[in-house]
Image (cartoon, rainbow, N blue to C red; front, side, top):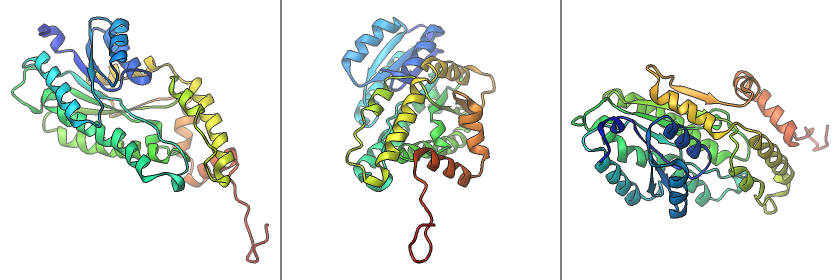
Length: 298
């Protein structure tokens, strides 16, 4: 059983094996929080305990496994005793890429299963510890949902990911309004390009099976997004914003963490959507030539 001071500063973070989750866990541990972080592999649990020290406790579960989520919630509940959980950071997520017309329904379903339903199931499991169980001692905790700038600006060839993050934004709004009854805050953090190993996976994506009309645009898109990602912000920058969201007396409802925010965040939201469409199409080589009624190119 952890002491009462630590009980008040206990946070659960999902998906901490690398990238943003790792950066969040690292920052919170360095600031004196006790962090329970979810991983799917025992090897990652051992590695992270060595890296992050005694204030870090791994939880072995997949967000799509209700039984694993429930068992991990029981572990945290036992450690907390009758105190509230300081925060829950729903970070776990995957990115499924490719043209939507060639996307299998199974792959699309998997995207939503992890990024949306998985985060909801985790929230439901830990909500009593955050304060929906009003018999607990301590102030209500906070929920931080890690969305993406893709939750507001949808790019081509990342349709499943954009759909999941748009949905997570809507879910967060509804959840925030429902949880006012308990005093539990729900805050959204929207990272842009963050430097992590995920860009190696993106670069390795096979485009040979993509239809010819999209093959070269997807290659261009992949080169651009991988290059931008590798030049992105370190994961700890997101960790600092999550720390602010968890501790600020009056947190914002949404935080954006973006490289060059004017170009990558502000302008795309201010420009008319069709202007953004034309810019993206030109960058990716997808502008279709107009035809007259006889079918001749103009």
